[in-house]
Amino acid sequence: MTTDNKEIWRPGNMIYPLPAMMVSCGATPDEYNVFTASWVGTICSDPAMCFVSIRQSRHSYEIVKRNMAFTLNLTNEDLARATDWCGVRSGRDYNKFAEMNLTPVKGIKVDAPYINEAPMSIECRVKQIIHLGTHDMFIADVMNVLADKRFIDPQTGEFDLKKANLIAYSHGEYFKLGEKIGNFGWSVKKK
Image 1: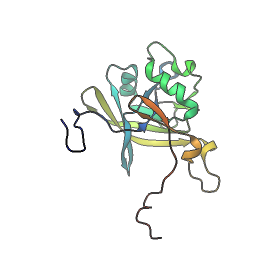
Image 2: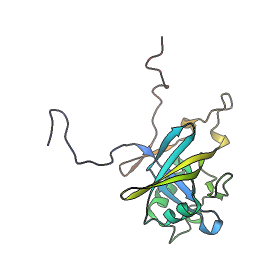
Image 3: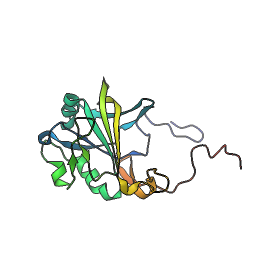
């Protein structure tokens, strides 16, 4: 079916691009795991809250549920191969940290490691699990944010997203982020 200028598709998840995140979990080194997820996002800014949606069949599902914690690790061009690999291999069969030469560091505020090589890591404590269809949504409070000093602008103290070379996921493909086109509110600023 079509309209004059739009083709109508069946309902589906076409909200792209999304962050390509490596999510780390596990309270102790023997259960540490990392998986790739793009079903992540911000829920609230005050208090800071976010979510990750995980299939019940995934190895990490029970680890996150048992420990009620996970860490979202932003990914960049340097981590692109590891990001993809950790999304297509199971922690049941591989030690993903070792296979991808990633360094797990014990979480500071939660029982989940962060990835030392990640440009930014967001430690999260699960507040609620919502059982949905193919995925369950783990709603969490943000407990701590760790920013790699290499990407902090020395003049402003801000995290330099452009310098970090973050990547995004869009319908089965990974992309470099593009050029800045404006700042929040630029469309209404007086000239």
